[in-house]
Length: 135
Length: 135
DNA sequence: AATGTTTTGTTATATTATAACAATGTGTAA
DNA sequence: TTACACATTGTTATAATATAACAAAACATT
Ligand SMILES: [Zn+2]
Ligand SMILES: [Zn+2]
Ligand SMILES: [Zn+2]
Ligand SMILES: [Zn+2]
Image (cartoon, rainbow over all chains, first blue to last red; front, side, top):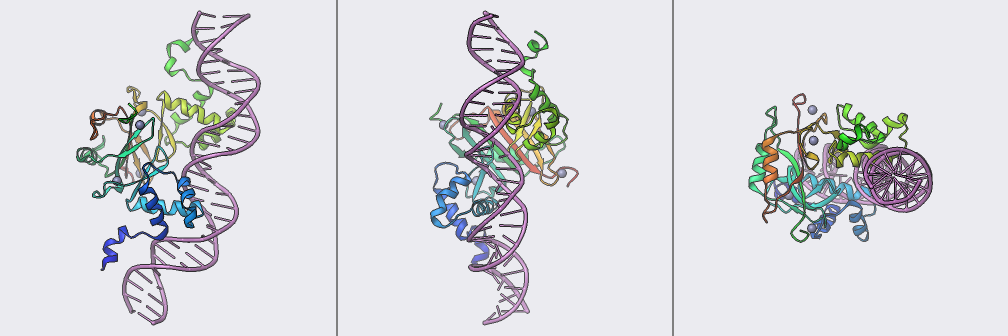
């Protein structure tokens, strides 16, 4: 059991690192083919290479998919085990997306029970409205 | 001058009615091209005809889009003005989807404020887990 | 009947995502 | 070290999802 194992969850492969860096630097969610276009100069030529990296990055929680937009954003809740419990606000005018980090909200949702008493530890919540600037 | 006037908000056009009926009868969310296949015998031949009807049905709240699945389900909260505030549970094994109707949840989310004090009247929440049968 | 609006029909195309297969690299343990 | 299991890469092709653009018909209101 060595460092590699400990940090396995943050040990990115070459393509994963390239694509994560791009998403992480971006001020807005990026779509797969926009990513592809941007990383072609780095030798990533095919959609599948992008999608594979995206899948992995989502799986390990480094990025999230904004489902309503088919776009990807870097996780900014580095503390949380949040590949599985995400919440975002989305501006319907400028499309600005912000990851919501609210202990109250995540607690409420993690404890929410449906009619059958079922609890769900995994969820995705997307709020829509107008951001400060667009209001 | 017929039924049309009274039920304006639920007065569907021919294609809208055909497609709504299909979705409403279905026990599972339907994808656009599955819908297309099913209504070709009724004269709806092109994807755009399906997507236009779907857009309208979503807009008026008769159906909802399950964003993580690119599929459509009939609204079963006939009481609520809920085109804009939806919550679902999704079984990750059998893909059963159920619309959640919880006064507590919708109240909590409608009143939720982000860090900037911003409230959002529109949201979509998707819970993931295993349904009763699959547990 | 005149009008503006919504809905429809149609062809073409754009966007998003996966299948299938071969090759290479990486971590682990005998 | 060597061998094995496994993850990652490269590549071509194709599937699945969604919209653009334009013309015609249906519908609602006056
Ligand atoms: Zn996050
Ligand atoms: Zn905005
Ligand atoms: Zn509903
Ligand atoms: Zn199930």
